[in-house]
Length: 81
Image (cartoon, rainbow, N blue to C red; front, side, top):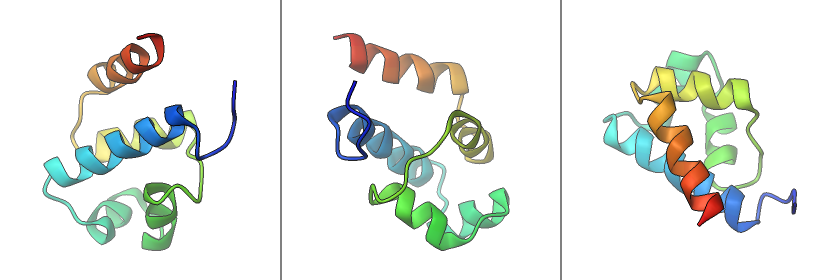
């Protein structure tokens, strides 16, 4: 499996995270503050400069009020289709 941030899988994850943040009505600064992160960390994730690990992904989903199971299922469906 390609481990680059530019792989189609990574790009799909980034697109999902951006959509979730926007749908939650939060800007990058607000979501980063909820997570205790610098806004620049979230920005780098959203532009594909930085990978996100599973724990960060789950914390981000929780902070944005998204259902983790639905989000993971969405990514799995993208990867297996």
